[in-house]
Length: 69
Image (tube, rainbow, N blue to C red; front, top):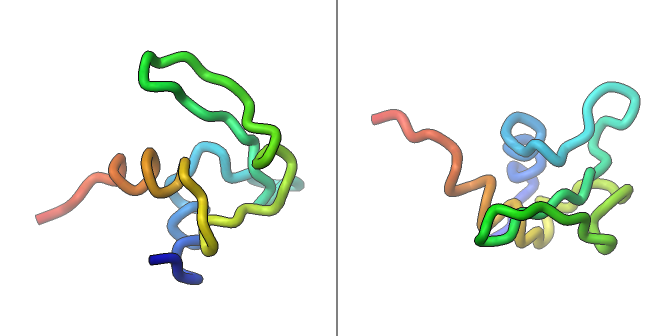
């Protein structure tokens, strides 16, 4: 269920979303279930594609956004 709004959400909440001179460039840092981190070469250094299909965005970023209610 990807949308253009996902890029705005990624810009605000995703630690992989580059800032400043690398705005929108993905750092590609992934986190395993056991807490170890690694670089995903399919993501690193590329434009953010949270508006299409990004497993990290869908599985880590979205569930981690605090809800207000």
